[in-house]
Image (cartoon, rainbow, N blue to C red; front, top):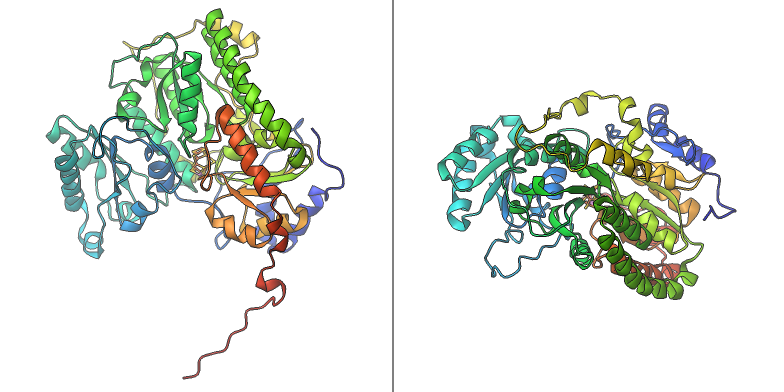
Length: 543
Ligand code: CFM
């Protein structure tokens, strides 16, 4: 596919957007807005501080740690140490689902609860350690969970509560409950991304490797960076099971702490969301010898490709054949849906501005619908997510990143066991395997498309006015502003009320939902009041 002709010139669009900024801001934003060329991918400024005062899509470090990486695990009690709002707004808001099976309504599924120490003025002034200790004790007494995790919010770092010491103390006291903590204060780093890294470090230090049970099955793998939004993980579990592949842990959708503890018993790690969990993949490989490669289960073609890659890694002709059969069966339904829907979506434009991986992955689904992703960007990803991991050595570590601990990992003297010999890895490499690699978003985007990191609200509005895309993908903060401009908005964080969108069945769901949105006539009727009366008129109260 190529870019539709008669589109505005991206460089001119960029210049027009920057024109309205003060000189210093324009200079900074200019480096985060690039016109793409997939052959010679240009550098994008990413993972830097947002200009103060600009309305950005970003969240905080705590959100990335508690909300994103640890939140979806059903049998860990996640306690937010802080004011109640942080706990409340990170409580299932992105629709991560779980299936607790037969454990009963109050069993090992704590995701429906919101645990917080609910800090008050008094705790900020005199310290919150006592309250935290009491909260951990209460959670333990009430639920007897296998694990309790404590998450620091901004005030905790400011007043200096020692959450790690308290967690150690409580862990020793209980004996049968793993208690560990995360220094993921909201202000650490420039975005959620810092929280991902902190979460990865602690889960690696405190959880992975504690078990010694390998699940039954010939081909055992972990899936990293799949958070079961709208039931995606359920669909992938079904698919892998029908192929005869055993999923040990999904980090961290529909998972349990036990599965994490046994992660080092698997033979392969596949990485979905590179941004949020590449650190764990790297550390597991160094310590235990489990290779990892990048997959993508968003999009039917990508799903087929990823399944084939997994089957070929295990080098068993029986598995390879079985996977082919599954693909064939599932693809028949995909093709039928696509034949019906694609004529109605072909040639339309999409824009995607989300997190750190979906803005890339969902372009595959739009491609299958015959739609062009004319502009895209991440909220908080790093240059490697845009340009590919090959730029890693050239990324300058600034003060904000240096803030986050880099764990030094060595091979485990007892448990390090390379799953593939150097020769085997080389042979796989010759067959096109790229281990420990990710090519990033830009090599797959059209020449002349716009790539914008940490997009501002103003930039978003200008893009919509200029291109009139058929659909805009972002999050809840953007949703209604975009729709008031007459453009349907698909939430790619929570999927609105839809999903799953992963795998083959997910692709069909997505085709249907997008078809409905881009072909609904109602958007042409939207006329927000400011188009007729562009100013808010008010009078000073006199009495
Ligand atoms: Fe990874 Fe995610 Fe994403 Fe992300 Fe997120 Fe998310 Fe996201 Mo919202 S882990 S980077 S921090 S794929 S919560 S499930 S949708 S911004 S694009």
